[in-house]
Length: 125
Image (cartoon, rainbow, N blue to C red; front, side, top):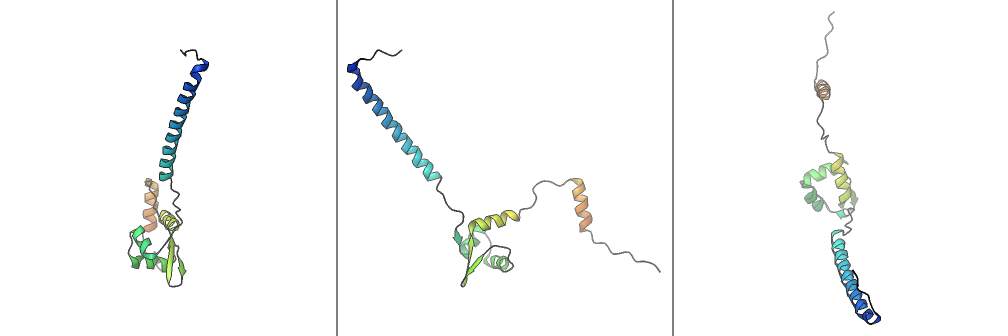
């Protein structure tokens, strides 16, 4: 139950409310700083050199050039150097992902039949 306030208690109550509001503002500032640190908008469309892309993909440089020359990996050539973008490399990796769901028996049979190489029948004269 609240006590009855008088006019003389008003400065004390206002002071207490002011202190509570200040504490809340400090807590909000701390939370905002933590959220900003976590959600640093790191743009994924960052340019990379061949060496950086090789390190990112854990790929040999010769393999990287092999894929670039055959237009498998999206790359831009500026002068002598290639420029690759991180988000494009990630989407290239995801596009090459194999089916992760197990095949049914019918699908396995169909795949096996398609992979068999049969000799054409000889027609006897």
